[in-house]
Image (cartoon, rainbow, N blue to C red):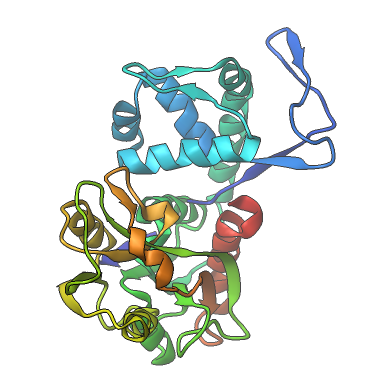
Length: 326
């Protein structure tokens, strides 16, 4: 399978019901979560946990896995949130906690079973060409992992990928230039999700500034923008206008990393979701008076295109990114 990407992983989940004791390494651990709920463990987060503990650090694990350090940190944090336990001790050398060690006793079997299944699925004879558009906000490292696994499962399907801001992706989709679109959309306004969209999850936006700066709303507030194709840009402008606060666009950049760097450098304020707020940022104290729309992450599928390959990729994206897996 060949990927073509323009810039500006098959995925299995293993479920363990909490009313079943987990056994391994000669002992039984009673579940610590509500017995009525199920814990869902995604393979790539388990792989990341394995690698972090084996290498003793997030940087080393990222190098081995071929992803960024932030991607590894995010996977471990998400895994800890899912199980409701601290799995690693963060320090100069990262080590597994007792709960982390318990989980690792199963991780190798789960990862091996997953990889064996992927290898088996690569015998698929499905053929076709797919055109995928995705917002960078959906964590490109995870998207690459999904595409890599899909490619091994469907080696005769070519996938051409374009990554950009959602407003431009919407235009490309409507013009028939892409078959699938992963979009970040404001829940009100011109770009609101459509009836046929599959909503993966919804979250709030937060006004942030650099941790070492103070931006006074009495002056002209410098705004760090994703540009005119940002799906909530008009709501941002209206919010400042209603509050009588003067603004200027200090940066217009379609890249998430570019806006993050500008915030950290103290160049202005930006509206970001919590997943993309770094340790070098803090909430802008005056942002509470400036309401922002919630945003939804949706999968939009075209009715044209090669339907069988399209369904295969769509199902893989849903399996990986659906609310039950987040």
